[in-house]
Length: 116
Image 1: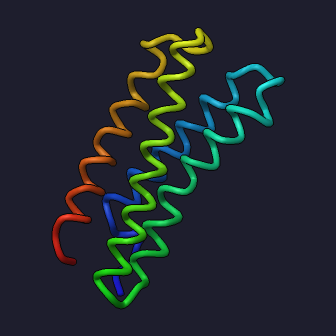
Image 2 (image 1 turned 90 degrees about the vertical axis):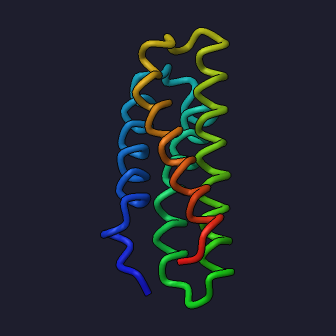
């Protein structure tokens, strides 16, 4: 069992979650139960699944939870693309979060491809 709080991939997931909440607070209030809810839930799912996966005893289970985290990272990335496309957020305001997401996707993909 790994201490999830020492994992860089978990720490990056926390950064993404904080950035997603910050972005969500800037979106229109009428989006609270639409994009805002989906964005924050998907972002939070990234470190939550890393934490849960790190406690699993088998490599197969660990990789399964890393795959779920990767899916959530892809979901956040898609929401950012939609926000940009519909004009709710400027490309420059989304760049830092997009960079964090890309880094997280690479780390998760590497964890899925290799053994623990």
